[in-house]
Image (cartoon, rainbow, N blue to C red):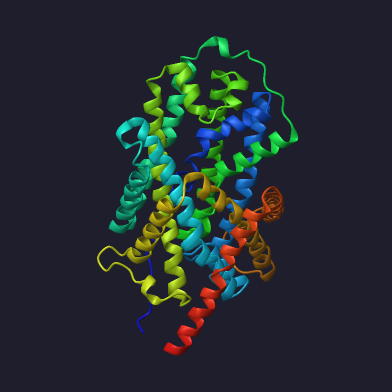
Length: 432
């Protein structure tokens, strides 16, 4: 049998930064400031919450970057699991991510963008699922057309949303109504603080995805860590400026209760006409996140197929464009199924039940790889994996206590990948 073709190292550090920031800077920035205001009575306290989130995200991202530098191949956590835990657990993680968690989270983001599309064109308000489906198909086409096509689109989308979010906030601050600044903050509690921290971590979520394209990144032992560092700093600056803008434009009690806090803040300063402008920014932001996830997550199935743990059909590349066209098609198809099967909130809650389990397992992988002393070009600070392990335990226990039924359903669905692995092993043995 002809060995599967390898993807080329066509991506540089700028592409990696665009992918990293573009995936993460999506829906969180438009809603999380409300929860932060509910927990933080002063701008300094609000900055502290975002700094805590950035620190955890940086620890996680640098932990993944260290693993990527040690094992510089496409597939991200799947490659690390295979090396540390063996093929069965690697299969369970990779299968779940390819067919469950990545398509579910991508569908949730696409649905959110489609909902805001109805603000721009009211005729689309009752066609949310169709709009989301078209957006996912469009990102599939971009990434099918070529690695550079998808990466260039990601550069443009990421630059656009960073600049427009900052530009709108700056314009709103310049025109801000003075009477809203002096309002008293609402009282905070431990529960409110925890809720705000969960929202902040959600806003930083996605920091692991860039490692899925390690095998296509030039000099990954150096550029992966550089991209992560630049990306985390960029996100922190954007989130803090957005947070301070909201706190300056809305009374804290109003902001804390708002389901669309940034839109309300901009509207208070610039008038009702700004609603369509902000809706357009949300649409572009979510489209950029979807494009980045399709670009990276499609590499996971290709890596698994190249290893022989799923059928070799998935590892075939487009002969003309040299892209993993089949795994892109699978990613798009699975995402489309989730778009029509559930709604934004249901998909997001399901995604949150399992993702921290994978983050914790990857951090343990980094610790075990360190003990093996493998040659590498980058090493995170000694405590970074431990921060991720502690956060993963806290998040998983908290989610299990908050909703035991939903948590264990999520774990059961992920565990259902094990029978699929056993079936494929039997098929392989019969075909051999």
